[in-house]
Length: 92
Image (cartoon, rainbow, N blue to C red; front, side):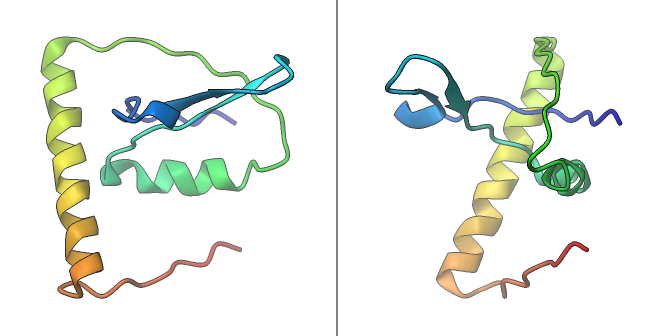
């Protein structure tokens, strides 16, 4: 199974965490909401191993990601302020 989506590293200190023993790490990604379906597929792969390939994108595509990131922040702000109801999604 191949899953493909656009993402960026968030501007936070904990975006990349290295294991204290030095034998691994954890990466956090910002993913625009237009790729939510890909994230749901990825969630179904929990517990499995998979290969990760990172490719940089041209500046024009980067602008699209930044716009989507801002849209995601606005939705999150609306949910937190109570303007938009949060509806949890269950995947079977």
